[in-house]
Image (cartoon, rainbow, N blue to C red; front, side, top):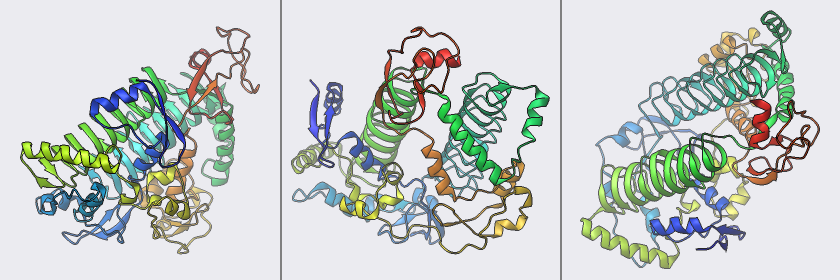
Length: 573
């Protein structure tokens, strides 16, 4: 096979299908995609409501519950105990396939009948406001989080304790606040790319450091301020000069911290213990291309947020030893699974939604411990194989086979999903593309009881938890819960003047996007091209400009100083 250029049927832009992509499609017996990479990603993202929560009553037991489905959705929604229980059977909604009609049209009819689970969460305690989580305790408004305790307003937190307002923290982090891509760290605030650090404030890309302040690119250092060493006594005396409990002071420090981050060295990509990998934030992987936020990948391509997967393409938020997955979202421990949504522990399934512990399914929704079903109808193995083959041929004729579920059939409005976070549209733009739009998003307006939040946390009374605030960015109302107030007081942290969602968006803006650009290393031999960074040692290319080029998530017009792996390691090792 040779590379082919195709025209995306959605955005009408050209895109390339590589020879190895054709090999993968042939192995799983699907036609090549007709959507470009970005449109395929957008389509999957538009099926993931990760963090927009509502209250409605369970359609089985009648109890009030927290759910990702707004009350105005034309869907049956069960609370997790009812959905996982034996009080209903998804096969009750079985349909026969009509070869005179398109598949997706009939699938939509099944989707509107089969009950959906309110939240994707299990084995958790006192964590009602958590979605896509497992094994959590005392967590609140935290998403895609596993085996964590006392974590608030965070996303992608793993094995964390007593953390708040963080994004992607792992390896037993504890007492972190506003930390991003941080691992094995303790009692840090406002940190990005920290690993094995303790009590560091406003630091970027530091490893094995403790008691460092407003510093970057440090390794195994202690008592540093603005990248300069201090004695222990001098360090703490200097810190006393900053009134850290004041919001005004913290905003000044955050403004300085942004400058520190821009003037620091940026590694072209965070790729560690990996071979033949492109993308960003990839660990312990090999032979995986254009992947972002992954660990333990092998022969994976065009995937985002992946933990332990093999031989898969075009999938999002999946893993746990998944292999041969294609166009999948929210998938754990599956094999030979294509065009699926929120499915766990399955094999040989296609076009399925929220099916678990099953095998040999096609076009099914809500099945558990099932096999040889099509549109939730039970068949013998022989009947299943014959009917599946006829349906695939029919779907190829209608142009449906080989494509993920249409966005118009997503159970969410576009603005409720991660698509709005990463590929934002306004209501008119969404409607023009045929996407649904939720007009009644949660969050009150104009209900605030306090307009001016106290500047200093020491001036905040216990009664503040009874007040309602207004976000200075989106102007929606928010409040402070008692455990949150206690965290602020212990960390000398002022109450934020942004709502949790705006704080989340701000954190994401501090990470590079899930895209790459080809560009050269910015090391000129003596320092960076812009003259801001001065090299500390002589590099292998000496006084010449580094000849290396790479794929990086830092666009050429961005202000960060981006070095290749060799130049970066020479400076920070």
